[in-house]
Length: 99
Image 1 (tube, rainbow, N blue to C red):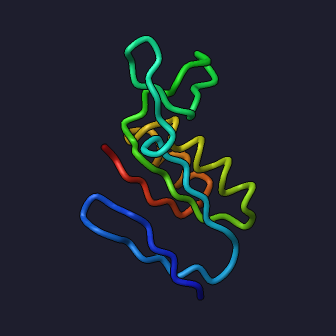
Image 2: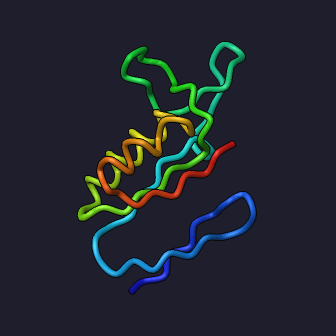
Image 3: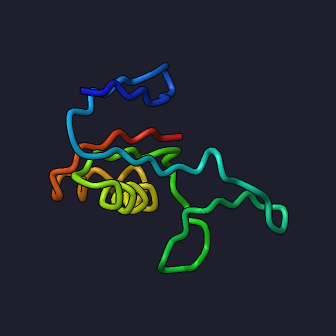
């Protein structure tokens, strides 16, 4: 496998990736202010605005990078309370870092 370190609130989590791909979607890096409010790049498709997520990062393992990227973004937008349900339903390993 290939060791991959993920930043977490209490240090690092090291995953051993044997196949497939990992992708991380987060709101902690690409942020800015608009009209005095913090915004980020993860958009809620229902509103067209930055998603009001309480997750900082969602990392997903999937067969391809495209799948991992799409699922990580969906889990991030879903937020901490809702993200585990689709990850479990899709049988996708996910590391969720909450605020």
